[in-house]
Length: 478
Image: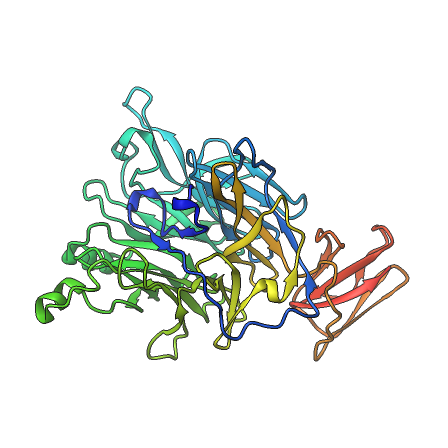
């Protein structure tokens, strides 16, 4: 999208244009305390789609999902029209998905989730969007509460309120998202589970107790899911109050917990006369293992006081980061990612310190593109997805980007407590037990992987490789 006044900024979409309100990451250049010194930088690899800055040609949009194993990424482009795209690590290429409205997440086996266009029966060719999953080039519908003939049309635009699949577990067993009923256009959380017998997804939970709360509060929209733990027991996103303010919230084992904006601002305003939070914005995300949470919150809708936050279930309240910082996702190690300044500096947040990725890694820019904000991460944080900013002929725009920070040239050998890796006779020998090992060439392409034992590399060319063992990197030479 165009950036007003040619300032560099980026926008976090809570879902898609249906909601009209967005968290605007307003421009505010600032220094971030605690960033690492730019020395001994490791080499990372930046992937962006091909584009022509002079003629405004290319793929625009944002990466919203990265698979747990880092092999896939996905998002959508809403610059000109809603159009989804996928990225495969095996090729390093971005591929546009035909007929797609948007894609929000992807599993380890390449099952993508989002929504897509369908023709509505009895409407003489009218189309609408509906939740679904995309596998091997084909879209499949997910069960919803309303009949096909009652899908919201609205001209078949991306503003349809029929729901969207927003997250999928690494093993593709669970999908979460939001849906509406047939008559009341409010959004409700939903959970689908794969049925091995029917080879389809079943709608197993629509969280009736939360639906009742939404209806009781007379929320303008309702509950929107943003993320999910891999076992489906935790859903994250935002829950609206009757005032329309959005509260970062989670659902744990069917029960809702608000993390920001803990009371309805409308009620607070009536009691105190203070209405500063009436247009509050916020959302929550969760790591795949369900142990860590992160998100953003602003007490006003224009985002002027936006900041990130982190939380774990043993904390009484969230911990806010410095003002004007952004956190949009968190990995299984508790490292949160986003942007350290609203000027667009991709960053990570760990142990109370926000660090620009450019203080840790160096990567080759593609036609002046630079990594701006991280929206998604693999479980180990080795593959990061989000947006890069590019200066086009009519001003700066955001394009989808993937940054690989593990298994690329420059990664130093790190010996773990129980693992050691060495090459002999064409094999990568791994001492000690491990859960997952992956071998990458210097272009960041996965060439082999294993869950136990040693890895046969006799079929790959001679050269330098990086073996990632449970997130620890070892450089080997064949």
